[in-house]
Amino acid sequence: MTTVVPEALAALSLPDHESLTARQRRGVVCVWCPMRLTAETAVDLGEQTGDDGRWWPRACGPCVGRRAHRALYTHVALCEPCVDDVGQCQAGLALTRLVRKYRR
Image (cartoon, rainbow, N blue to C red; front, side, top):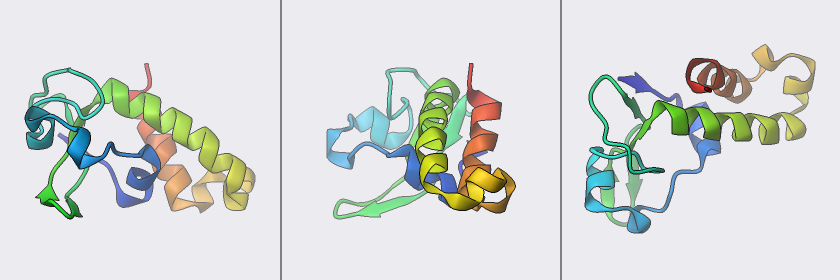
């Protein structure tokens, strides 16, 4: 299982906890699509806290890749260090790595 670093996680825009099914909240199913996850296919989106307590969302690689790709375009347009060199920005670098690993 792969874990997404915090710098990239905020840009991926997790769905609201209340909008998820019980299986999505438990990490059995991707938070963005109905794909069933296994230890080999799951991408760990880190521990989240909110009014409902703690939860540990997970997603499938293709969804992470698509969301990271969109988030990278949005981020780069607003981040001056990324315009010069994406390696200077932790969020830009983390999103780039997610795109390279999961974008199909």
